[in-house]
Image 1: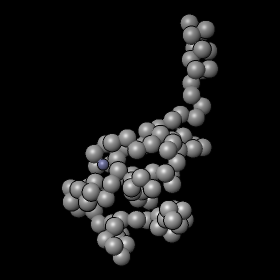
Image 2: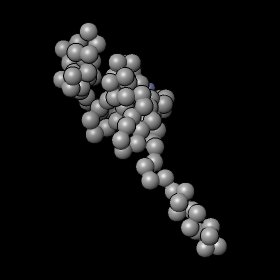
Image 3: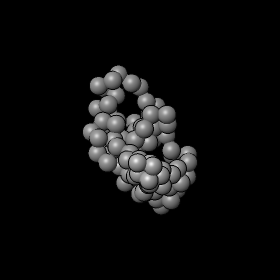
Length: 96
Ligand SMILES: [Zn+2]
């Protein structure tokens, strides 16, 4: 009994990995823990996934639009009509 308890403590994950899913369709976007995200934030961004601060991730602009319609939430749009909060975070420059 005591041995089982001690073993359970050692087996406990110190830095658990979470799965990041699209808030609309639940598609897996990445896995992350306190230190890293895989694929990386920039790779997800480049792949067309959309991160919304204090909200979460969407796999595509299409899912952002569906989510917005379902929940009547308004997201900021850029000049092209896209939801893109990280345009200024240096993600886009790396594309070119
Ligand atoms: Zn999606």
